[in-house]
Amino acid sequence: MSHHHHNPFVKRVLALFKKTHEEDDDSPKYPPALTAKYTIHEKKLGVGSFAVVKECSERSTGEKYAVKIILKKVIAGKEHMLDSELDILKKVRHEHIVSLHDIFEDTNAVYIISDLCTGGELFQRIVERGTYTEAVASDLVRQMLEGLAYLHSQNIVHRDIKPENLLFKTPAENAELLITDFGLSKLLKNNNEVLTTACGTPGYVAPEVLLGTGHG
Image (cartoon, helix red, strand yellow):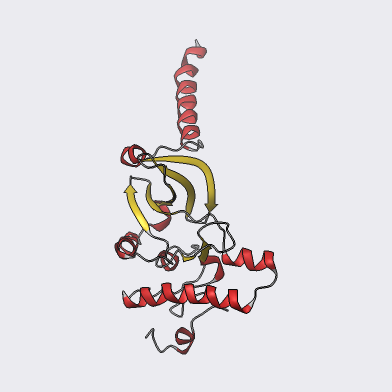
């Protein structure tokens, strides 16, 4: 008799387990609008405290992009900031800035499709090479400044320029350098980090931020 009493309970537990197990599964459900247009490759390009970045390709062209998946529960209360940043990102078009191509959303996450940079971080290259000629260094600085000048002309301030936020488009020696993660870098700091008004990473902060004179 007792066997029958247990049965529904066990069934319920198993059902519950199955459900939670599936949600943690490695093949997440994406918004249909997203998967209709892009194929998501499960290889993770990066995992941050707030987001996972994967590679995807546009079905119609085969063109590869990066998709940044930002979990809503992590940015709870800051959605309006994300929205305003994305509005900015949509307007930005420059050869030295990672462009946003598409945005999708479901109840769990925001999916941001942007340029795929396969050349790694400037920081990595500096470490690997160990040395840079002045000519190469000044060319990289020029590319970065062109991107920044464009942002400033659009009244956008990147408050977190550092080698990790500068990516090469391809692994080639002469690959273009692109600025990434601006705007979002301010919003999506690791929750444990203190966000003070003098922002940026110590050691790479723009002089006018430290001086408190405002940008421009």
